[in-house]
Every structure is written in C-alpha cells, then in structure tokens.
Length: 111
Length: 112
Image 1 (cartoon, each protein chain N blue to C red):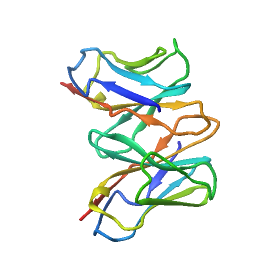
Image 2: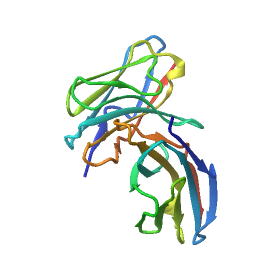
Image 3: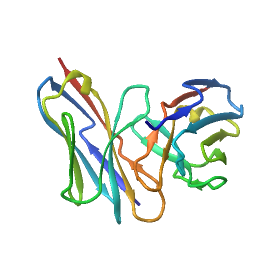
C-alpha cells in the first residue's frame, strides 16, 4: 500500500526566510510524485510532477526535488501570498490513475 | 486552461436524504475522481472512473455510489446521507497521457 508522510504539519516563516517542506513516501513502483497548493476553502492547484530520483523543477520561488525515498519543496525568500497548504501525492505503476495524498503542510508567511 | 466545475460550493442536507454531487470537466479527460477531505486525514479517494460507464472503488466507497454516463460528467451519490458524511468533497480529472490531476473548487457538504 502506498504511503505519504509530510512534515512539518505547520510552518510559520518571516517574509524572506527560506525553508523546505518534506514529503516521505513508500511506493512499490513510482510513476510520479506530485505537489499541489491548496488555499482555504478551495480545491488543490497543481504545481509540479517529478518522475525519477535526481529530478528538479522550479516555479517562481518554489523548487521541488526528488530522491528515492522523499521529496522536498524548497521555498526561497517567500512572500505572504505563498501562504497555503502544500500537498504531496504519489502515483504508482500498477495500472490505475489513483493518487495517494499526504495530509499536507500548512505554511504561513508573516509580513 | 483545464476546468473542473462542481455544481455547488456549499450544501446542507438532512440525515437520510439522497444527495447528488455533480462534476463536469471540459478537457476530454478519460479519468475522473471523487475525493473527500477531512482535517488530519487528508484527501481520501472514494471512487474513480477511467471511462464512460466504468467505475472503480477507491479507499472509502462505503455509503457512496457514482455514475458516469457521459465522458465529461461524473456524479457522486449519497444514497442516504449521514452526519459522518459531512466533509469537503473534491472532484478531479486527468488524462491517461499526462499523469497530473486537476481539481474542482470543492463542495462543502453538511449533513444535519
């Protein structure tokens, strides 16, 4: 059974203070690892897909990296508008399109 | 842009009512999903469909059913709503060519 664990549960940073969010996963065969951003009361918004260890993707102040056991979402010089819950999910190779999600990290950026 | 639209943002229903949640996507995606999201539990898959009239149980199908009569539309049905089905319900769709799923805005259902 696929499993995803995210840490920390919540993180408060000063504006401009860089940090990283962690996503540890267990999957028999990884098809893809996904990062989403979710604002309160809204559906998750797709950010990145990573497919293999060593892969990195960037978007504005966010960079996602992947190893064989975990993924990191690095946030560089964050702004208050980066405040959201960040969700990690995995998809395995066993023939269906199901995503298994972690419980998320709630990020707050203080001006 | 991909658009996944859920029919209601907020719903309040009484215990025992039959409830329909509707979802429409406009990108000709083969796959559609229903999740529920609860504090501390994250997103859990209820049902998914990879083709018209096809459905597969997810992790928590009990108390729910689904219908997919057209490719663009996927309905979640609560046959007899109960208070433990109070939750945020999220619909998503994806293409078999690209793996990422796109979500609707969510329906917050309260069963009283």
